[in-house]
Image 1 (cartoon, rainbow, N blue to C red):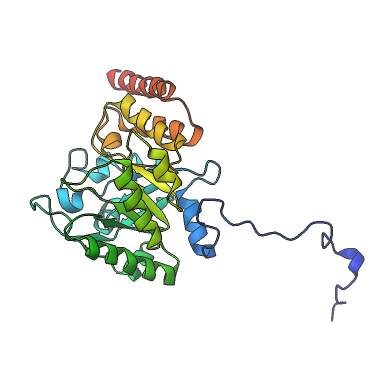
Image 2: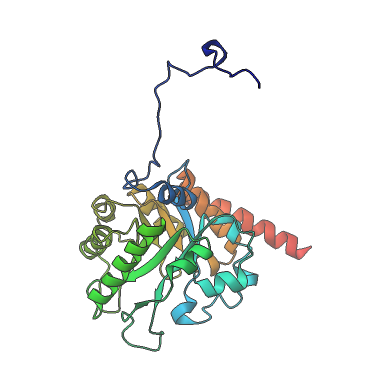
Length: 300
């Protein structure tokens, strides 16, 4: 039998260093379980505390949106530059390589198509065990505050939160705005706060030009800005910059990336804005340089 290694002088217990266990620093995350904090750190860059999410889930109600006709051709080359992909399980299984290393945010609800006048009649459409099988970091649930099916969508959110809490999956509350709903700070404060109060660990909402900082300040969990409709590239970079300096923990953009003239250049420029707080004009110059380099390669 070997001698027991019990000699105190042979070991270093670091008596002079207090024991510590640092939780993930993101707002609202200090009381979350280890697994949820770990999933947050997969979505939000631990150095900057912010995220560039690429939203490509439009097809669940819009079909083959412009730029999303071929996910394998148009989106897979963009995926390495996204901290997280927001998409449906169907697209994940059929189009995204299993070697993808960054976070997955799965669309967890659905219902009416774009052919319907009322888009708020959503139901949960994803079993929690399937999300676990797909190694998702979070479920995205749409909440239509002020819509005809407001209560139903809030209940969708709370059911997802309850299931997520059992298994350590995050819930992203997405504040939807219908045709009759406004996007001013008063409405966005209400919608974001309800999502957070109901247990969502992350909230996605739109940017508003006035008082957006009150939206992010009054929401006790991280807010990521939705990209919305396609804008000129410089305008999209300006919107992203304004959002993060006013408290957003990143952006979740789709059309402003995959419908850009040079999508890879655009998402790389967006990363400069979000993670490095690069001025939008400087980031646009960076975008143009990358775009022109690609044109030169193609022309050869």
